Image (tube, rainbow, N blue to C red; front, side, top):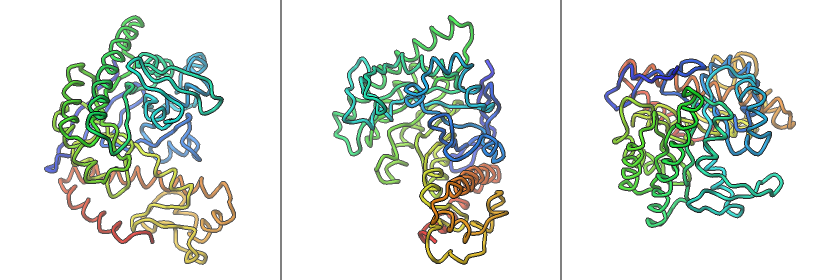
Length: 378
């Protein structure tokens, strides 16, 4: 196997500096993964992602299963070859997307029966099927199918979801290992997902059950779905306290820039979020001084770059006045340039976090970021 994970350094806060090796390259952790839902990070070419230093991106199992189809991608050489991306890829299980189709799906112990949002066709996503799809895609890291639930949730509903998630994880792991052994090698790492809603004891129970299945890495799911940030942190801490120190930990679907260091301080190694790309398409730019809502009239004659402290190619060349004009005119270039900068900001922000861990001053770095973002949009 070409997979490994090692913790290189620790901070007094609990943060870890590490390295995750995959068949498609090594990843410096903690890492932020840009989201490439349909085999593309919206608005960016792969050349731009490489220029920005993206080490790993995330692909969406649900969307790629429905279109163009996992079997077609398999025939064309797998997801890396299909999308011409030679670095690492993590694929989610599709569980969150199916969860969001509340009027189009039915969940049972067997799996999730749902109707496609594209054409209304009916499908059954089981733990085995989710694993099968991701093996066909050939991603480096694959997530098991889990049951996501609404927040806030009643305790009995959360407890039932934990039980189902564990049962699904066992089935997914068994299918995955049997298939991998049949193929003669483990070509993927498969991660389990801790659930438990906003109940700390259920989070611990879920983590403990998944440990018995013995995954090479673990994710914390079902958070950042509307609960306060403090609750997200509390639930994350409850889970990571039990997760193995020698294995990577992934907090799914987070977060805002001022929150990232908090999660890293809890021992989180991997994160992903659509926020930098989605915000960019809506004219929200992240900078070292806080958020810039670039469509505001105050920027109509602003000759400064988006972020005077930024070294990305957008900030080196274009002004705020020009970016505002592009958004006001509805030009596609606006989203391209805004996304390029925002992804650079997130990836560079994680580089600064890794550097802060190396120097043992993550807490100081985090507090400075909190001050800058507390002022609100610029």
